[in-house]
Length: 83
Image 1 (cartoon, rainbow, N blue to C red):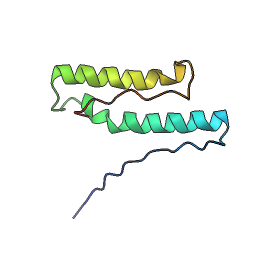
Image 2: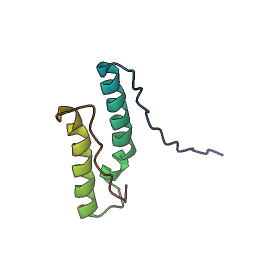
Image 3: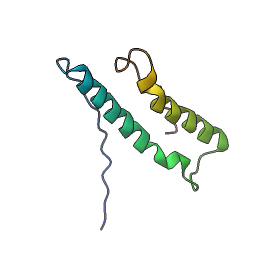
Image 4: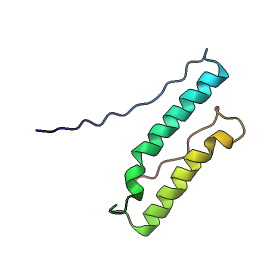
């Protein structure tokens, strides 16, 4: 039988890492969050239109993080409960 395992991955920043390494780790973590929510925008998603809009807003906030002041020392946006 085919079985799938879902593993949560969190990148733990190294306090001694260079700024470029911290940015790289932050983007990696952000990309994982984006990948984990790809399903929400699929054409056959069970989400309501309101939830799809909220998911789209969340995903755009993730994409916009590197442009914010203080990057990479900023917080991730709050993920909606249904994601």
